[in-house]
Image 1 (spheres, rainbow, N blue to C red):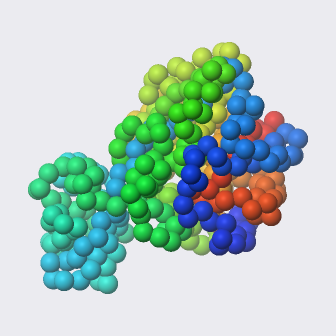
Image 2 (image 1 turned 90 degrees about the vertical axis):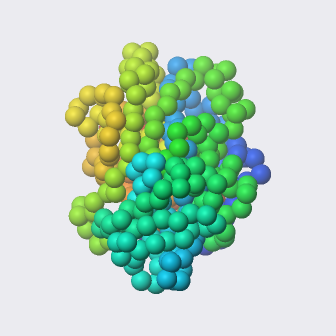
Length: 343
């Protein structure tokens, strides 16, 4: 398939620039591949599409304030977007400047962070400092790393709203956005219905926003992201299977995590890097249903949901969402997709 197969026209005014006042107030487009049908619902209707014993899988990564502004010691302005924290004193980052910094360049970031460029790794830079743990410094001085399609500066409210209510493990530089719709009341309502849950961790990297270059999607190489699927989650999935219930992924990050952990043919605990590229033709081994947001045109995430639901139905779903004025991307509305029968 070609990159152009995943393009669509999206009016700019449908890109959500801010969250709704209430997390669970978003709309929900239900996609039924078996019946080839679309249903317009509210997110609070999600429980109607789940049964007691179904297992929801959540990504418990926590977004860190990963954007820093400052200047080189020589005076040139820089913007740093963290890709990942490597250890207490070093991190890997994108550095935007009029001229790429060389190894040894001193950077002064925000009030009070002085760091040095150690080396370059392809498009990224390794930055080091001795003033304390990077995670602590980012919490004190960093900005919420809102996606590039949100055309405003971050505000204090984003620290809470660009974060799931169940976020636990710091390390992501972009939110697992399907989870942003859940509030505590919604989680409790699903639990009362007998819906079970388990957790895993994928630290979303800034590479998730990198475009696919070239029209031949088979030549695209995915960025690496850190994944942890614990044995307790594998056990919960096995138990759901024995009950005859479904495994429901909350977000594409959960899909990539689970399918990475099952890449050898059987789901096992996993702790490592994933560069799994899910595109049409992929064989899903674990996930039976998917809750997701609406994704960018020509993106790997749109390719993933097209692989899951079928390309023609997904094109129809996106055209319907545009026509019905759904809100798109990170702070936008949601979609619930059941698996295709032939999968």
